Length: 138
Image (cartoon, rainbow, N blue to C red; front, side, top):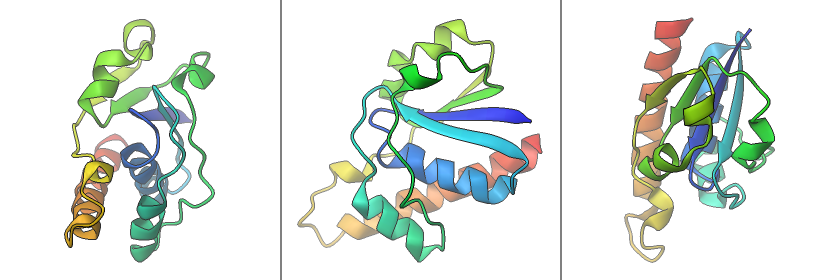
């Protein structure tokens, strides 16, 4: 079974959304992991926005990339520039490395009327990306 690791800075938002969609579209045909170069906990707004699309990530955990250094991944996907630049697995793992930078909606102004809409936009971009990725490799 192919193994995929999704990485972002804090493993709280973008990588968690991608993890959820990759699992949904892969339908148990792949083993999906997500991690961060830091650990910030799973973002509560990301959980809420994903539930709107019937994807439950509420039981996911925020993990540090060092927890997965012993795994030989087939694919490593970074979803932010900071993770791509800082990821130790990019230098030592033979996995196919893929990078797609997504805007970090958690950096949006929490008081803005567009706060939740920014999460939805990023969620939908990640969903489209993950669906296309799974269709290509499965």
